[in-house]
Image (cartoon, rainbow, N blue to C red; front, top):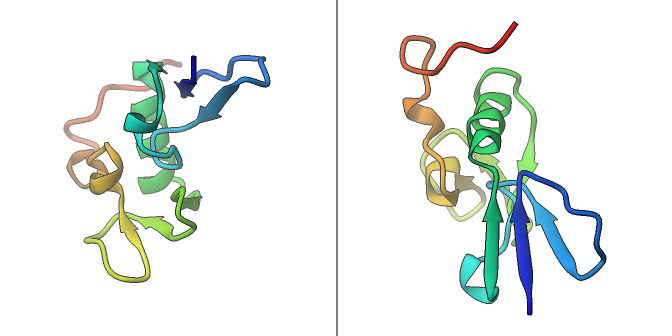
Length: 93
């Protein structure tokens, strides 16, 4: 069985561990495990902290529309364009 873990690293060489922005297609796997909190965390890292992510095909993930040279974060499973200070959940202190 081929397993993909999103946002929750599982310590097994036969499991592929990625975040929502860097993962390959879910359709390539028999099972997908997703930590829902990691999606919000990854989007916030892209939007607020400016952390750079690279999609599985090697193109940079950007908080903008897709182009030939970059992939939109919205196309990778999250919509950080809609994640604003007014709408996102408060971070735990």
